[in-house]
Image (tube, rainbow, N blue to C red; front, top):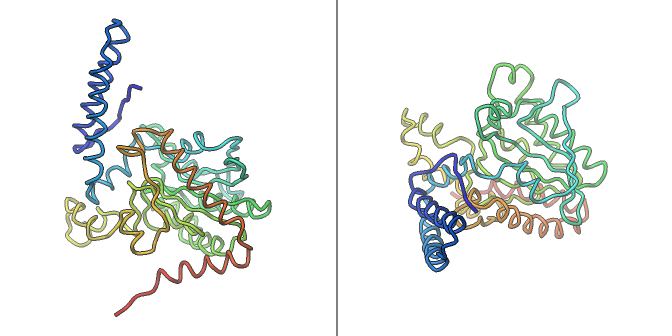
Length: 321
């Protein structure tokens, strides 16, 4: 399968160059009928080895870059590859619809679920429409409306986090951005159905937390999750965005760091080279983890489910002096 990328990160260039060579050889073999099978297989093995070598030694900053890769699968991509019968619902019933936050009922295997997630675009036009994945208050209110609908029909809720933060514009603040996020935190804490949160890209600040309270927090391995972006942290501490790689390392924003700290519950592995190399495989892996969690959580009585949910977040606030 020939791959095209909108962006090639510096550390990915050797891998992409080798893959392009493989693609060109396969195309030449198809067009001419020349048997290049042995050479192509040799290069494929070399490419697999190189991918594993490069992507197994990523720094925190490189994972941040991968989390923002425009070719990574977004919420709608996962919905397309993992579910059936998805119906997108619109509007918060107060002000407007928010294309940066999408959601609706779907079927994931044997389960009927409510899926809610932030959605980015892959080009300028799409990103303007999706507001770069930054939700307005109406997005969080729409999300809450769908969660309450899920509770009414006893459907588990799956949320997908991928945002640089809630939209900080004047209009958003005037329409109650902080109140909308705070209300979601309260209501998700006591929603009487299982909630599985998955960080599929970048998760920043209250924009992520607005759909981020759940019974299980999954995180794809090449993502980041923090109260502020590395660039924002660097600007505050050193007045220099260029120190973002240093900040990313110190902030412990990656999946292994957050698993050790108890902020997330499980790391979901990505296909060789990252999710942007193979959307199908990434979705299949995530689906298996979601199904496993649904099998477990749907067996827990509601009262115990809510008690454990609260205890989960209480444990995050523990510390020793």
